[in-house]
Image 1 (cartoon, rainbow, N blue to C red):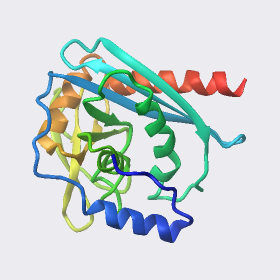
Image 2: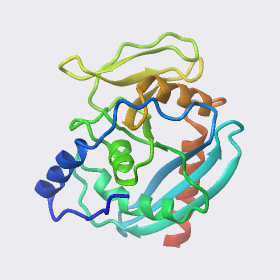
Image 3: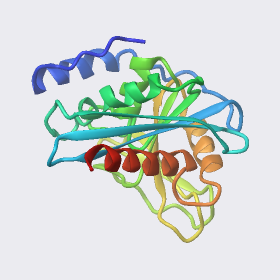
Image 4: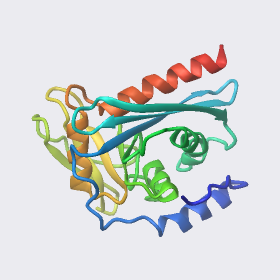
Length: 226
């Protein structure tokens, strides 16, 4: 695991992104969907108190049963800057991952990987720092454009940057609901990332890993601030 050091300012943070982006592995297919373990990570903030709570929930990829879970609570030590959100979240997310008693397997972030203005969102950053395969599954397309995918579960269209680069996919996980936005983080290809997302989103729009991590980090934040 690469040591994580909080940069002193925005300029230093961008320099860290530039250096770590070169370590992203894009030529591995990643773990086979439906096998091994999958870990959802998410964070919740109390902005008034500068508190952040992170959760990591490990699921059996075949059954979606919870295998392990952990939380961590910390202080927000980096300002909100568009494109640099990972620096606010990663220290506490790493603490939650470190508190697990089982290996994480594939990490699924509630956010972005390549679908990021600097092509280095939370899923990429976390993947490089931990060495784990990671993907991002986001609720909105950020700054990118897409055509509406077909109505059926599994239909998708490219998520495109201004220069035409495909940075992810708009993926329909359930009929009659909005798509999610899948991007590669580290050590997983895009087709495999989408296949994992569909297996994890068996009943709802969002992956079960994200749903459970979201609920757990919100609970941890409430307990830490009351």
